[in-house]
Image 1 (tube, helix red, strand yellow):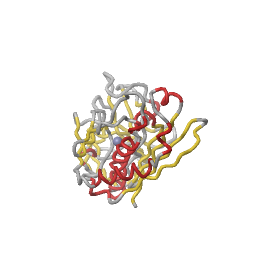
Image 2 (image 1 turned 90 degrees about the horizontal axis):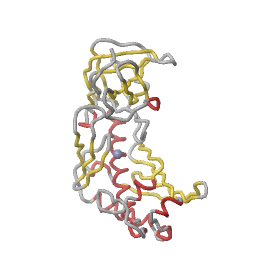
Image 3 (image 1 turned 180 degrees about the vertical axis):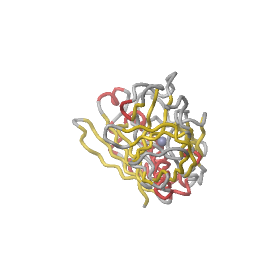
Image 4 (image 1 turned 60 degrees about the vertical axis):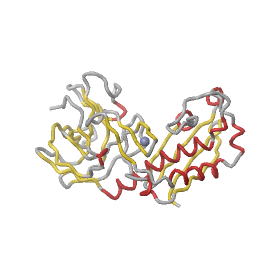
Length: 273
Ligand SMILES: [Zn+2]
């Protein structure tokens, strides 16, 4: 039966295994099986903002081929981009859809690849720190007041981001500096300075804080709001994270300026040195 409540998710607490009850299975049009559980340690990809991909692992020993955010109104299951409502819509449950090859039932053991998860968690925390560092490095580049980030800098990252991709131990963020960003007050002359060096200097300062990282959550369900809290900084985030900036090692930011269809593109790659 399709569930009326969100999947209880345990990955925000760092879990990589769960014993779970199968609530619903159905065969998708491609022949693969979608499995919904009462609780799951599996981080699913969220197609509204697919920055952190799905965990890898097994369900009762068989490989989980994909894990995707789904939603149900009790009558039908919608998966990924097909979800017609936003999180929090009354009467809808948001669920982790585990994709497997063979049907399962009863109680199952969920096991997540802990090494891969650790690398993505480090990459996701690195991504947040890099965005704070980039905002800081570009802070002089605004002629108007705009929304600020968790550290009080003008939030270039939020205003200009096109895509963010978490990779093992790092991230790739793509920004677009077009007409609308300039209208908001972004002055492109700031890019003539050595922004990469300034961002790396700020990133080194953030890493030197040795701050701990934790996830704050408003509830146990998939759709409940969660926050990344690192020292004094707090950013809304549904992903998984390292438990301390000390887990990240030495990080470097590389900035590449590109031509984004007539606008200035900026690609920020964050990785271990
Ligand atoms: Zn995040």
